[in-house]
Length: 157
Image (cartoon, rainbow, N blue to C red):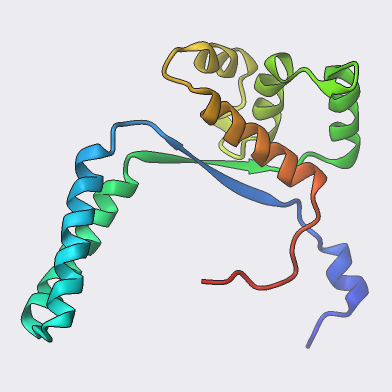
């Protein structure tokens, strides 16, 4: 039996989003991936089915190694009331004071309960390994979850 529109709306869940953060140097695996992908394209052009099969397997393995250099931080949207309270608390004039707001917002939003510690986030983000790009990705994730409507169009591949 198909749920009615009202039933579907009643079952609405909070949105979630994965923010990938690079934790180790991927240079060597990236170079290997490029070499294998190039070799695969050349093998396809030569119609070398044995090489294509072998290189496709190798590309899968090196792709897995390459992706292992990132961790996936899953965030969940705050309730509308919690987001509004946070924005009032962290606003500095016309903008959000992200230097102060990011750690507590991450602690509130992380799905993984081991990441729900404001002090740990503050200490983590102050380390020199964390770039402005890393902090930006996390801020963008929080803003996307809490301020943008979901796109109803299926993702394009």
